[in-house]
Image (cartoon, rainbow, N blue to C red; front, side):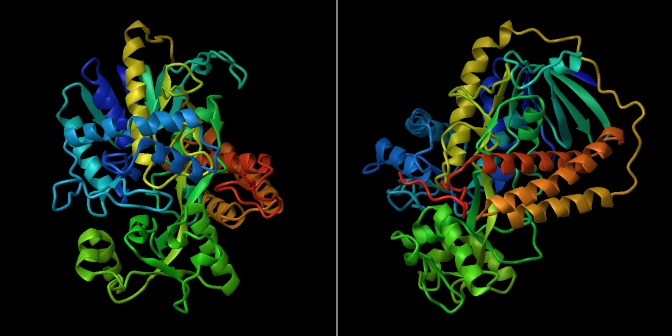
Amino acid sequence: MRKKVDFLVIGSGIAGLSFALKVADYGNVCIITKSQADEGSTKYAQGGIAAVMYTPDTYEKHIKDTMIAGDELSDENIVRITITESTERVKELIEWGTNFDKNASGQYDLAKEGGHSEFRVLHHKDNTGNEIERALLDNVKAHPNIEILENHFTVDIITQHHLGIEVNRRTNDIKCYGAYALNEKTNEIDTYLSKLTLIATGGNGNVYNTTTNPVISTGDGISMVYRAKGKVENMEFIQFHPTSLYNPNEKPSFLISEALRGFGAILKTQDDKEFMQKYDERGSLASRDIVARAIDSEMKINGWDYVYLDARHLNKNKLIDHFPTIYAKCLSIGIDITREMIPVVPSAHYNCGGIKVDEWARSSIKNLYASGECASTGLHGANRLASNSLLESLVFSHRASTDALQKFKDIEYCNQIPDWNAEGMVLNEEMVLITQSLKELQLIMSNYVGIVRSDLRLKRALDRLEILYRETEDLYDKSILTVKLCELRNLINIGYLIIKMAMERKESIGLHYSIDYPRRVI
């Protein structure tokens, strides 16, 4: 199948959906998503979205908090753009029908999370992302110019490489003409030609053995752009959420929102003692990198598999009212959080790097934008401030739409693009080749490229990854494509980028902490 569209959107989270709504009045939009339309990281975002809404909060305070959290590695211009546009973008979200919690006076009930100096996090109970996804999807499904194709896996973006023209990382005029996508219903790889394409494929947490990300977070967009010789940066900065529910047989790991610590819950050892004061004067509300390393340290020193989060001292009714999802989840495995402490462990949570984009979300490949977790805008620097990610998606999808609408009518389709050639490919009848390689990859990354790293661990990880890479590329080159094979290939690519960029950074900063290098002093 061959199709032409004005705007091709790859991904159906907050970044992809908000962009689609912005451009759909001016051209036809096709959204390709690898699973169901509502399945993705946006849906699982519990805490909320940070924005300056009321005094005494100010843009300058939010900017300062973001720069501090990012270890001053954030791009200050990008931070200022994002924060000063936050109020308008959130108002649009509300106009689209998102319901945020309000207090008795009718104002938005703002929460405070680690690293924030003021109450500025809008939320809907403890399932904010699900509410945002609902509102956006309702609007998208109602728009006549938007088509959503579920269960379509994007294999590669199309560039002049597919015309037989050589491109490399020094080529400065690489162009995107659309994408090839696997229709899981027909098992055919279809060709989508577009004037402009937005990659909004989310994160890559499943490169690790334990993650809060949904199983579809396999770094597809970043890998596609890297293979197409686009620029990718800061992949070493992987944020481990300090508190996922310790429940070893469950994947993905259930997130215990940072908002619970903002509400007053306290981290404790297994012998019921507070420990965060040893690591940071902010205690349990220190930034995520510090809290995750502190928990990791306590677990390793004591040989524990987890620590505790204590909410027993909090008002029972308010606790249940503010965190009904967390309360119900814990109760389902026999833990009443009003009377018992919650066992928690750090899990891979968020990728602060990704496809390098400018202030208009333009990648280094012409006619290709990126927004959301797959993009590296410069906002997060070495560590993301809590609840800044949903905001970043809104701001940069808006800016991408502004730029796209100025140019799409002047762009011509490339009609010379060939359809996907699967001649000579055979069906892989040994699924174990894929499942075992994935397990090996996840263990390599978790054991050697986790919260704390060293040169020796990184070298060992790279050596082992090289074997998996060669085996998987050989399988890919002769097999009829499946989603699982493509995802494995993408995750190996992601693992390589994380290791490579971690090895190149000869310092400890933010989320990259190496025992071989001193921490940068700001």
